[in-house]
Length: 426
Image (tube, rainbow, N blue to C red; front, top):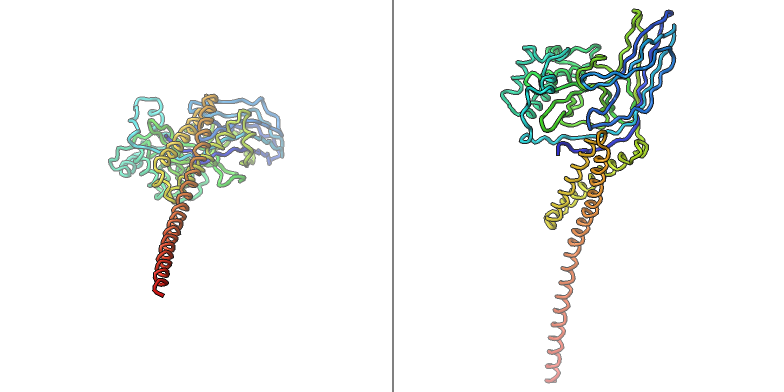
């Protein structure tokens, strides 16, 4: 099992962008917005609505780049004096909180000639992984360690300790962050990626949105990172949120690695006439019923499967507290195996839902079946344990009562016998 699905969230994401012309002159421009998409199995987003109002513009276009990013673009936008252009993008979202379970013995060596390795170990703007100072620091941090997972953890620990969180008005980059010891989510991510690349670990940026709680409306984007392990894939790291080898369902990415149509940002309005309009965005994230996500009940089933699997884990944990694993060891081991198999099928379902819906449905159905059966067995074991505990005192009471009864009868017979003998001498 590569990762464990801890939680599943089904919701709606609404991204609203407003461009306002505060001048008395017309402003012409182009708006480019990267789309939240399904590049990883940690979240799936279905774009269900795009609305643009308030200005004249050419037909919208969709663009792609070599990093797999997808953009929607409005060209030929004409903002009249004091006019406003508003764009709304609505998504259905199925998102997972995951925790990676990396076994270093299963991590294979990198193919240093692969396209992935060559692309994601090279320096780029703001990620100066070939800078002598960054290379030296990266080597000192890893200190001869050869396990890439342990190396990534050492780099993460350095970044979280070295950088003090401080919001920056501009993108400053990895080298600046290293030299100044401060930075926001961008600098934390740039530095982590640069240090990883400097010692031969493929790493890349993730940019998009992150919410502290469901229902929150945010006005700014967020940035985090990923590093790559053979046999595991891309593994998330958010140094500012203290997340290593894990990510929650409130992180939704729209840019993976090097964006070609925009910089690392949630949108760009390119103004062609030299006058800068005012712009702002807000992003809302709220829950919906799993039945609203899709017509094939996948979301509803995987939510239920994860919930029931966690309930089985709780049952096994409570059972261990009461000694179930000692009294019914074979049954407890079977439940642990049932939990593992359910989690593996949940992982498989999350991995392939977009590309192979039928396989995903089959996996989640199997996971749900195993979880439901295991849940019944887990609570039955607890009941049997309590029954055994209750039975032991009851048996002791019964044995004591029988013993006392026998003693009483014996004493009675002895007293009766003594009385008869005494009567013979009277």
